[in-house]
Length: 216
View 1 (tube, rainbow, N blue to C red):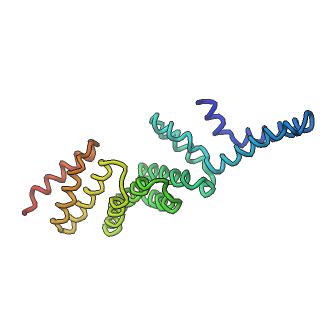
View 2: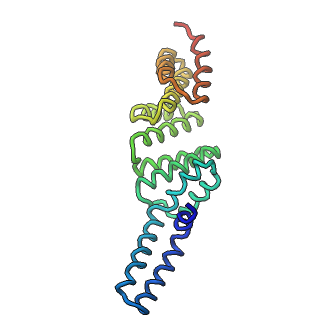
View 3: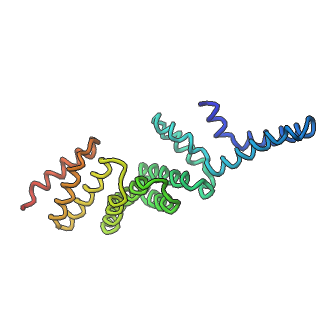
């Protein structure tokens, strides 16, 4: 793992070394051998621009090292050159970190860039719209929040916890609009998801108190 991290973090210096090694082998031994380090160097340079350090980030996140993951993200200097599916993952991760830092404008911008890059799976696209809906909700833009949350549900979400979150936010929006019938419909949909996440379960329990006060 340490060797892999070394290769990912130092692709360009290693590529330069391999090019130099290729020239040495070509002049000192034979050019029939020199093409090997040249080829590896080209692969490493292409990987530097098209993949970046993204293959390592998941490991940092699983270990709970968010600072390390953030530092790796910051090493990507040319995100537009990343391979499209990797580029969308890059922007999704950036959006998550921006949300954690309460920089909602940057998170929204990154999510839209990720969507523009094309999500590898529909569930990721749904999650992006869920996050956009949550951001719009926090900003008080209920119309945009509703549109994004509806898109998220329509496209599909990765699990019942996310689905319940989308329905709960839609229910809350309709509550604010005093459309109690629609609020109840979305609340019941959230309840039917039977979420397991503790935070979502608590939100569901809190919302049920308000629902109990609604007549009809």
